[in-house]
Image (cartoon, rainbow, N blue to C red):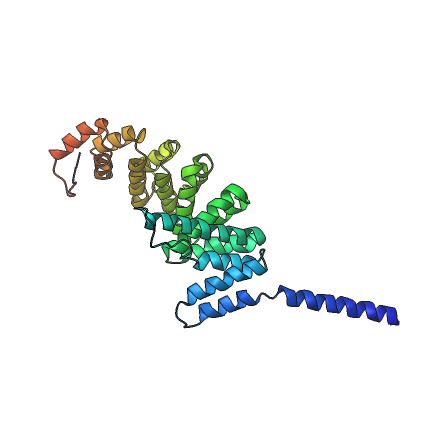
Length: 303
């Protein structure tokens, strides 16, 4: 190796070493050490370090994610004159934390999409879960929507109940703003082989409240009278379909009345309960008829 080549190799190695040193974020490391420690106010101290980490390295995905995960006091103001200051603070805090989680996603999309859907949502902390939901809504509107929906479909089909529940919640929340995309996705899941997946899809459809889901929910309810056992949906899913119709209301009232008037339906009482909460005048007659009947289940009617 000649002298000029040796100098070039040494220069390249030195450059790699300097880049490696520069990529180490001491504030991020300190913040992570604080989280693991037993020190008082460790999360608050860690948040301060994560903020410094981002100042030093604005594109640091991990620092953004951890700031979104732990920064629950960002907008706290006990002296606020607003009557709803606590509610306003919580909303602002969720927005800010969700923004940082979304910024982490923007830097490393595949990694943090997986983390948000399959790890962050699992945390039994409303602040963390709501921040993750906020970030996922941002991904739906500003990121790779197809990958997000693919990930949520994977979660709602999972064998793990936590994944299924979290996915149904996120799909329902996104679906309230984008029913045209989410409702067909959920309707497709009504034929999934796993009962728990179908159950969560029905729940999400009810929470979205879009009338386009009514025919498919009615089909589930009516499947109980199918001749072949394989064509009958489970009683639990059928009952949830009636509840979903009750949450949708509107055009679903007609279908609920039909179920309530069918004395041979095992879901009749469920339909009456759903009608009793809607306040629709079309429900008056079936509810009055129910008052004069005897049955094994009691129904409290407030109308």
